Image 1: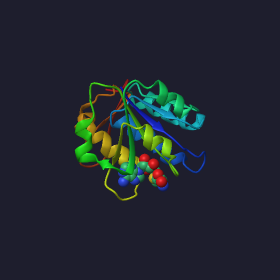
Image 2 (image 1 turned 60 degrees about the horizontal axis):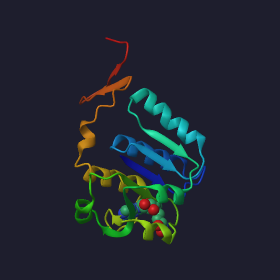
Image 3 (image 1 turned 180 degrees about the horizontal axis):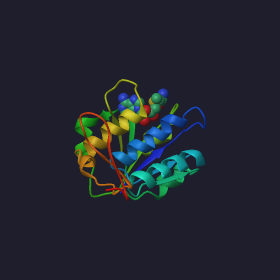
Image 4 (image 1 turned 180 degrees about the vertical axis):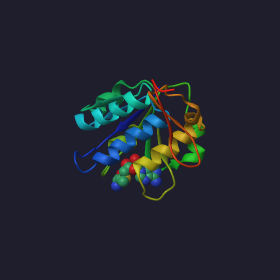
Length: 171
Ligand code: SAM
């Protein structure tokens, strides 16, 4: 089980970024996202993607991050530009345990740096939680996300030009 904990989401301001964090989480191998701020719109958007493109990705919003962390039985990773280097740190994560990946929005309180089993950096430049999560999940899953079949109603067939889309019910 891989879960993403999105902390500090500001309604309105972070709407698109948090949606992208959730989409990346879903596409790159996570099972669920916990968004600490209550935001039904984002939940509905992501559920609509799941309905069309498949998979069993779960979205929960309006949760107390400390409660999630306290009840979490697996490993906790926090993505931050101050953390240990991704390439070295990723091999120290026990893949047999559940994994909670924390990503921030604005300034991240010290509590999250302290509670994490490992703070991991994706390079030491400031960039984006979307990029950090994508690269982290790619390395952590050893790119296994590419082989996942979502069994969606809509399936895209890769092609060099144009768009090839299979919709359930069509031949
Ligand atoms: N100013 C914030 C702070 O002091 O923590 C960081 C804001 S940054 C736009 C939002 C999130 O992106 C961070 O909380 C972190 O999860 C992620 N992030 C940004 N750059 C990163 C990097 N180089 N490595 C890992 N995560 C990064």
